[in-house]
Length: 208
Length: 208
Image (tube, rainbow over all chains, first blue to last red; front, side, top):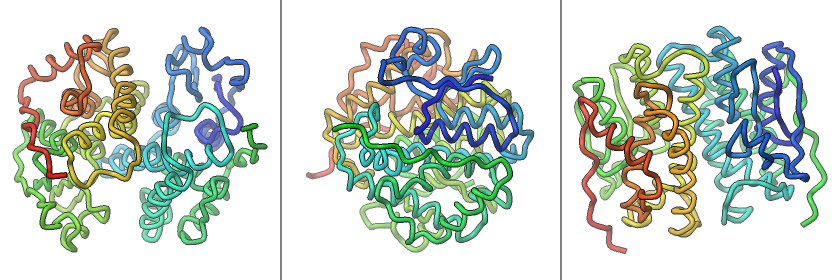
């Protein structure tokens, strides 16, 4: 199994974390955005959108971080990480979407703007607007995690794996987590899971 | 089964369409945003976010349109609309996310701005920026639909049900579909499905 990724990307980290939680060995191919590798013909043949992560598993090419989690959970995780029961599965997909909606345009965008990461999605919003939107994601997480230890039920699922990285890296985007104590406790539970791997180190900002 | 919805909402229409495709009878409760019903205690007890659609099926309360599709497909659709095979399921979730990402912030937001719909999500972008982002969703659809008749494989799935409404209503937001002929042909296939129900009528604009 080969993962095309970028070290500091939260979406790539999400896949590395899940592969480790599943105990799956894999190889990494770091994509060099400085040389434009993400827009090279070879990489675009894997993902025409030019985005990481891309997972190659034998003949299969899987793109988009949360879709990669679904693939891995279904293929290698039994029902542990992605239950098939209708309400649970619906809930999990709801979190996967929220993570790529309020999470992506809030938490992830605030971090990208604060760290001056290149290559982020088109946007005209300000950093403060991203933070406000990101706090909407944290409020949803807090509301759920006041009721249950994990986002869907009594066990961790890919909903937790998907939502953890950009929530935990909120402070890198200037978003204080103190107002969300249930989120803080959940972050600690995530970090105690067997197979947990550390978040990306905070990179030096890109030159502006 | 009871659906809390708003007639002109594409996300609510999405659920009505799928219920009809599945041949499921249900009751509708139109939520009156003018009187603030969406922020009433009764409605917030169903969905703390105050958003439609909400589906009540016996004891279950399911929120968020694409999560409702997952629930209905799993509970009532066998594997026809949501295959469990890992690659197919991963692909379907990828489209559900794209629809609530580029689709929501592009196609749906452009329509909401053009029609002056109230209650849309926080945003600072312009109408033209929404259109540009919406066209990214259409380009993704076009790329796939040049290769396959439906978004995932040779049968319609909830990926198609999710992506169809705001794509087909693109012109309501001033987004021309002519540059996307494969999308146009797919829209025609959707509209020929047994059980298809018409898109919401174009409402009169809200007073500005």
